[in-house]
Length: 90
Image (cartoon, rainbow, N blue to C red; front, top):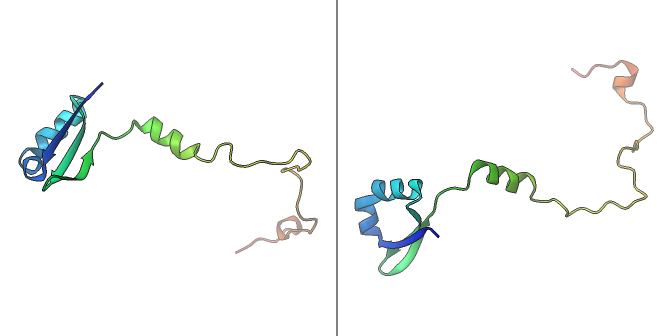
């Protein structure tokens, strides 16, 4: 398990580049920054890009139910569209 640290905002301000390097390297997994003893921020490394993409593009997976008798590929309108008549939209 990666280490976790807590430090004051004043200490973080003085050592921020060093702390960022330690988080990036994995030496510290989470830094809680406090002000007057209360947590005001948490510094964690970003998720790997692949995990971000998976979360974004799969976020609604399984949330839509299509009844068996519905054909999503069937035409919804029998009207003749302008493109079928050779009309060009300009």
